Every structure is written in C-alpha cells, then in structure tokens.
Image (tube, rainbow, N blue to C red; front, side, top):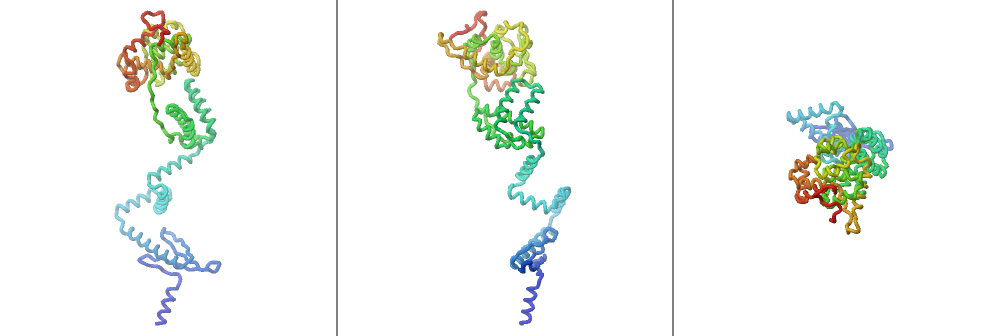
Length: 427
C-alpha cells in the first residue's frame, strides 16, 4: 500500500504535467528562474501557434491549463458541429480578410476589443471614418491666409463687390479670433466662437454660413481634413413682423432723398428690386418707353433673368433720369446703406411736428410685395416680379395691407403729377 501511494505521488509531481479534463490536452512546464525560484508555463495553442503563458504559482498554472483545455474542447465541438451556412459564412469572412493578410480570429479579436468602447458596429464604423478623415494628409495654412486666398479667388471669378464685402467683413473677424492652422480648427472652436458673438438668429446663421464656405474651400484644397462647421448648431430664425412703409412715409423719404439716391428708393419701393440688384443695375436696363426693367441673370440674386413692370408712378420718378447712362448707383454698398439711414433721418420736420421716418430693413422690397399682392391678389405674378416663389409671397405678404392702401401706394408720384399723395404730408 505504501509503495502504491508513493508511486502515485511521484507520478502526480512529475513534470511536465498533462491536463486533460476532456478531449483536449494542455501541458504545464516547471522551470527554475535565474533567481532560483520556480515558475510555471502553460503551453497555449489556442490561436494555432504555440506560446507560453507564465505563472508564479503552481495552482494558478494548473487552473489556467484546465480552463484552456475546456475552452479548446468547446471550440472544437462548435467547429465540428458547424452548419453549412456557418461554414460558408466563415469562408466568406476569411476571403474578405485575405487581401489584408488578417485571419478571421485576429479580426474577430480586434473588433471585439473595439466594440467594448464603440458599443455597436455602426459606432465602430463611424469612429473609423472619423479617424480616417482626421488623419488625411493636409497642408498647414493659417486661417488668416486661408481667408485671403478665398477672397482673392472670389474676386478673380467676378463675384460682386457687395458679396466680397460681406465675406471679407465676417471672415476677417473670424480670422482675427481664430489664430490656428485650418487643419487644427475643431467644431468646438467654431461653436464657441459663434456663441460668443451673441447675435440674433439671422446674424448667427449668416456668420455660420460664410465660415462653412471657408472650410469647404479649405477641404477642397487640402488645407483641412473635414469641415468643422458642419457639426455646429443650426438655429431656427425667429422671423418678426414684416416691416413696410406707409404711403405717406415713402413720400417723405423720396422728398428727403438726394437726387442721385432718389431713383434707388423708387426702384425698391415701386419695383421691389433688392438692394444688391439696384447696385448692379444700369440705366440701359430700364426701358421707360416699354415700361419694363430687365434684371439679367448676372444681376439677380437667384441667377435667373426676369422682367419687372414699370408702374405709372415709378415712370414719373424715373423720367428725369431718362437720358442717363452707366450704373444707377455709382458708389459702394456701405455708402448705399448709409444713405438709407441719412435719408430717413432727413425726413424729420420740427416745425411740422414730424419725427423722422423709422427705417425698415428691406422695407422697400417688403412694401412693394405687400402692396402689389393686395393690389392684384396673384401670388404667382407677384413672385415672378420679385424673383422668388409664390409660397414665399403667400407666407410673408398676404393680407399685410389693404387694397385701398395699395392704391394710395402706387399713386405716390412727383409733385408735377395730378391726383397724387402730396409729398411731405404729415403722417
């Protein structure tokens, strides 16, 4: 009995040790370290190649070997019981990975590790795309230089001075505050800058629009990997009341206007032209005899040609300029805006007890649209004259004024005409 027990102990303590809880066998080795201590190594063939997992304690090594043998047993069982569909799926996966010299096991392991952070495959894919976008090869270009290059190209392509001025004012403000290379500007950088402007919703969107354009330009030329503005907040514009002038107010404005600016006011009030269109308009585009104004595609905001009728009262205001040639407005956009304010201020009359007419932003065009729609009740026709859509006319100009007011509006004529609203009349 003692001999048998001794033999069992000797066999149990013999090395290397074979661990076989099922069909799979895992070998555990014991060795001496350079310091004289014992260490234990488990021969791991789970990934098809042998590697040794080291453990300081015998029990840890034996437990690990037992778990590994059971894992291999389970894997071999699954492999042996694979359906045809599962086998085809494995073969397809192996074939898809072959061009990258990656095994199915290695790919599955990498994906599983990434999913611990990403959460699901859609997030994982988005993360990979984001990484690829952010690590494109880019050329470093300071934002200030990027702005200068964009403006230079816009000028070379014939953009209007008004448009260039708008871009320049907004983008130079951004460049002054963002002293980075374009490739290093983040969405949070742009969002923080937009928030700090503390502007109205319309102005916020205007700044966002031009900075978005700037980074579209940067991406196209390799100065940025992506457009950081795309991820910034879009705000809904809170439209207030549409501001229109009363017939008495436009009469006072026309009376107070300087001779060179008076036709500009008349074209906005009685033809509905946009400010930018007036600035681009030439006297040759105004056919007084044919009673029409030709707005060419190059002069229209929507880049589409249209014909605007000349009403009787507008013909009266333009008649003194019938022989003029060249630009209707020969100065720049900033001066145009200043003239609007100056003309409104000049309508004050202390003796008559009249306060200055309050200038309405885009009020001339809004007034024309409102009175014209009240006059004819045809949204499509009014939209054609304005160069926008019937839906816009219905939405913004329906029932803002009464037909009787429209009749008075289109009867505001120079003093030499009869049956007119007297200029300078007290409102």
